[in-house]
Length: 90
Image (cartoon, rainbow, N blue to C red; front, side):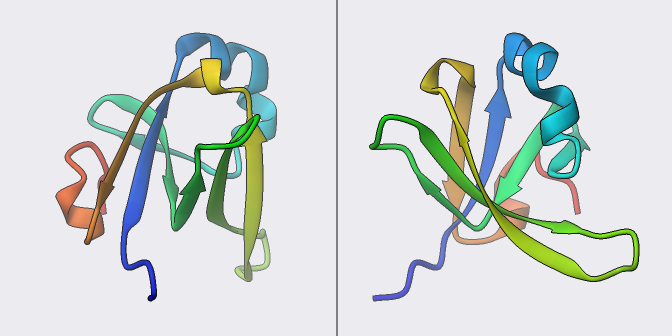
């Protein structure tokens, strides 16, 4: 069965302090500050894994798997559509 959910992940202030340069290609600004919009997440392993899409300077896009320590995750919201995640902006 295909997973039709999308995810918005809010990270802690410490995460942005420690990882801001590494996460910059995936970060978006919203109503509550920076967040990461993801197509998939895998929270059950030793790391919180996010699969997000980013755009290269030439306009092409790529999908990346981002693994971070669980302590950096403040909130993860899933919904069936992007517009249903309260802090994600179109």
